[in-house]
Structures are given as C-alpha cells and as structure tokens.
Length: 296
Length: 69
Image 1 (cartoon, rainbow over the protein chains, first blue to last red):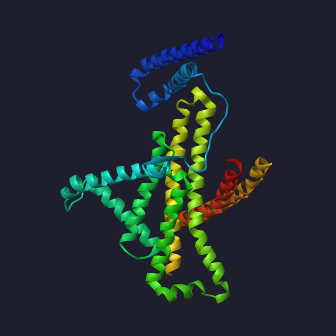
Image 2: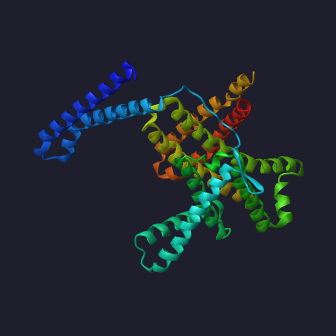
Image 3: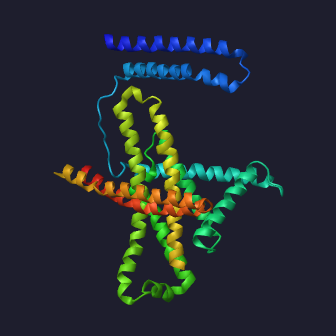
C-alpha cells in the first residue's frame, strides 16, 4: 500500500462525504418546494458527484485487492476449448448452448402446464403479452416470406429466443455459443435447408431448377454459388458480430482492471442486450428474405 | 508480417463505415420527405445495412483468422 493509493482513497472518501453533505443540504432546502421535478433537478449535480466518487472509491479498493490492471492482454481462440464427455469431445460453447436450450425448454413446459390451462376468452396480463408476441411474429413472417406454413413463424420465434438466450449467457461469464462459428453455421444450415425445402415444395423440383436457370442456363452456376454463399454469409455475420462484442467486453475488463467496476455494466447494456437483439432481427429477416426469393 | 496482413485485411471496414453512413443519410432524407413511409424505409434500411456490414464482418473474421493462432 503506497502513498498514491492512500491519497486516492482519501480523495475519494472526502469527495463522497462532501457530495453527501451537499446532497443532504439541497434535500433539506428543497423540502418545501411545490414542484417535485424542480427539486429533483436541483439535487442532480451532488447526486452524480456522489455516484462518481463512490465508483472511484470502490474501484480503488478493487485495485488494491486484486493488484489492478496488468496491461492490455487478450487470450483468444477462434474455436472454443473442448471438453471430454465420456467418449465424445464437445465444445464448451455447445454445452452452454444446450444449457440455454434446457432453460428455455423448462420455461416453455412451465408455461404449458401452469399458464396455458388458465387462458380465457378475454386475455389478461400474461396471456395478453403472449398473444401479442405470437401475433407479431406471425404477421412479421407473413409480411416477409408470404403464407408458407404455420411452422415457419414458430421456428423463427424459437430461433430468436435461442439467439437472445445465448447472448444472455455471456452475462453469467460464459463464452456465448453464438461466438463460435460451428454453432452459427449449424443455424445457418437450418436456414439453407428451409430455403430449399420451401422452394422445392412450392415449385416442385424441376420448377426450382428452372428458377435457378431463369434468365438463361448460362447463369446457373452463378445462381447456385450465390445460393450456397447465403448460409456462409449468415453464419459469418452472426459469428463476427458476437465475437466482436465479446472481444470488446474482454478488452474493457482486462485493460481497466479495478476501474471496470460499473463501466462493463454500462457497455454490456449495448454489447449484450441491444446488439444481439439487432443481430437476431437481421438473422431472421435475412432468412425470411432468402426463403421468399426461393419461393417467388 | 501476418500482423501487417491482418491490419490490411481490416481496410474494407473503412469503406463499409463510410457507405453505411451514406445509406443512413439517404434514409433520413427519405423519412423527412415522407414520414408516413418510415416503417417500410426502416426495414429496407436495416436489411441494406446488414448486407453492407457483412463486408466489414468478413474482413474482421479474416483479420482474426490471420492474427489468432
């Protein structure tokens, strides 16, 4: 414990005390203020000062305990480490993905057992929310891919739930399954299968081949190539975005040391919540667009 | 040398950034002109941004493959 640390801790503590006193004084002054919004506005500055000095104090204590940051270093592996489960070797991310799936499945079963039998004709509360969500997804799929099958919205809804759940697993300290190219590529292969399945079912096998050679047979290799590029692009997009978010979060945590207290929380709001939502939306809307292209 | 190659592979990200800005500015123009069409413009914009962004993502993935052993 050197002098710099002591000075930092003392400054943070004194600043916190000063801001607390100021806040109490402001609060006392504005007790008889008729407009509560105005009173809140007056207390805002000391409140922020309090938060920042408290953050600085906690960061200094964490730095003291853990030894602080040891510079920017990042250990990254493209493929996740593997674990041996009996005779099979499984990637860690795949296991995390199965855990997420299990949680989602248990939630679904609980909904089915406890919530669905209580549903009435007049929706209220939870039933309202669920019906709105299902209707939204139905309409979304119908607008983007046409009326193909009732299973398609269900599949898209489950993919969206899975992707968001996978992104949330990063909040528990796990590497998100979607930051592994194997996982995203398997999802993209499902989309590839759906594209060809609906294309063949709507037009027949010869119709599908004919639509690939539509302007002239010369162009057919290019069309087949671009069809095969679709799952690769879907997989790489999801993988790159999720891995990028994970790298940024890891770098923040490693380089800031104790000062990362709270900062990673704010950054995580973007990188673990908002960003996966947008990527899920893009994954689904691109899948639906490819399916519509194949069936039109 | 591989680090240099990885840095070079990230050049397309620059183009993707600039062009995503262009696309967004056009979308803002269109929405200002026709506010009632904002929903449709929004979905088209997001689709286009996703396709543009994939250039940057490919370069990022290639740079990672080069840089990470």
